[in-house]
Amino acid sequence: MSASSIAELSASVDRAAELLRGRRIALLTGAGISTDSGIPAYRGEGARTRSDPMTIQRYLSDEAARRRYWVGGHLGWRAFAQAEPNAGHLALAAMEAAGAVSGVITQNVDGLHLRAGSSHVIEVHGTMRRVLCLHCGQVFDRRDIATQIEAANPWITVPENVALAPDGDVLPESTDGFIVPVCTVCEGMLKPDVVFFGEYVPPDRFRAAESLLRSSTAMIVAGSSLVVNSGVRLVERARRRSIPLIIINREPTRADAWADLTLAAGTGEVLPALQERLT
Image (cartoon, rainbow, N blue to C red; front, side, top):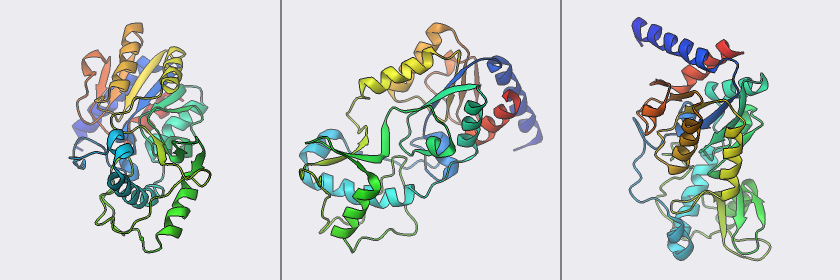
């Protein structure tokens, strides 16, 4: 980055701090905040193309599709679980501890905000940490399901270089012979506690996100292009209240026209700089 670009970014962060100082900030984060942790974004430079994403309809109706999902999901989760919170996650946790951030609404399923120390986190698209039985409702820790998978499929190994997707999925070379995990209580169908393509965000999660936003007096969007409607709906609620709206994203977003300030930069650069100015 050139000296002039650095100076321009610093001035933009100063302006953001002026807009946010003394306010309780709600964060809406997307995949862009986790790229510095080695998890790719859905869009923008370096994003992996998803020509055939798993939908909830296919998952429920197609046994071969479920097998493919669980092979790829297991390989991805093992690599996914090694990711560590980055400077952006840590800055938000520090700002929450200092009273500047009221909470984080995240579209990510990686759990990195919680691991960074944020305490008020609403995971609107769910989490890879849990697995649900669709028949009896039993909830499992993903680590226990991983143990079941590896016991039933001792041949499965995680390759050194895994082409991860933001949801932890990997396109496997083969699914031959793979035994899909089942509920150990009722042998029912299992599903990770994440929102699949074609599913809606659970109403209680969205209401919790709305409540967090109502209790806040400013909003930052960090690392999201706001393609998903749930994110746009939350930003629209902030716009209707006329509270300051800051967008930090390398790529343009659907809500740039509504923002008081946009910063076309990485969250790992901007959020720590904001933390220094606000705490």
